[in-house]
Image (tube, rainbow, N blue to C red; front, side, top):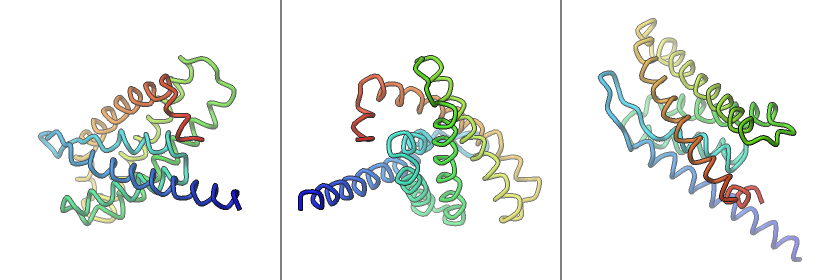
Length: 180
């Protein structure tokens, strides 16, 4: 009987923490800094943190749905399907690249470098994903290239914020509480 209670608590915890991270992804997307062409926001920080804290399954759900919800609430409904797939893909890329490269790494400097590389590849997926969506599905053609600099800047700020917060979570030991 107690094993069933533990499973139920674990499932309830997973659902709740996933919802919290989805809300963080959504809310952080509304903290936007305007640019001459578009804007960048803090959402990618929490997209990457979702994968770091929740793992590939729940992190993917939180990042995909939270970010897509921000598009819907912000009036960019046409981007919601792409955002859901792209942000979920970012979590998967960053998580599995880090896990693949990070086996048996004990050095803090190398661990930080691996997190950077994994986040960089995830943000590259974001830039390419939105370019492909804009050019093929929205019909902007090569005009979609105009969004690349803004998306790159978005990625730089996402990586920087993620690395700072993830390093603090790891150093404090709080990150272990997410992983059980």
